[in-house]
Length: 176
Image 1 (cartoon, rainbow, N blue to C red):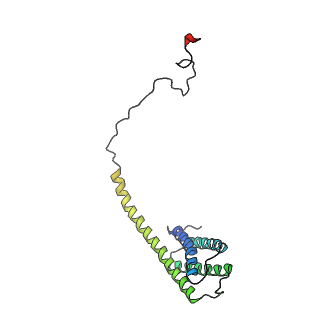
Image 2: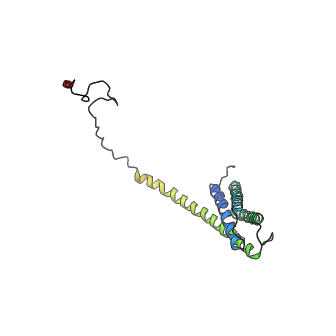
Image 3: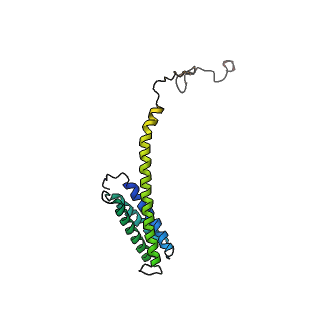
């Protein structure tokens, strides 16, 4: 993936990919279609991952909102076509007005959710950048010197196993 100057490209790509599959299925179902089969869900997940990767790789210097809406529109269109072809839905190849409205609402809701998440994370990162230097000055107190800890030593051999033959284990001397 080419490096972009936008630090939120990976977040945007993951959000577009994840929301595309979820919102496509919800919009298709609310629009009068039936629930997708397992095969359709797997294909939709693969297509949504590819769309998410494309969203993360695309440069966003010019009109990021319009670009996000276009990517979500493409994701909804491809998802609708995939669900229609794989599961042979009853509405045929044409889209009904109810399903068109559901997919259009899904595009708007998805775009608002993704832009809201980006805005919220930007504000959180900005707040952390301001708060962390203050916390670092409050937590670090270099004037305090800790007393030395006492050292405890056990009498005996420094070796892990004492195999020298002298010690208190074994039968008494008189017993032999």
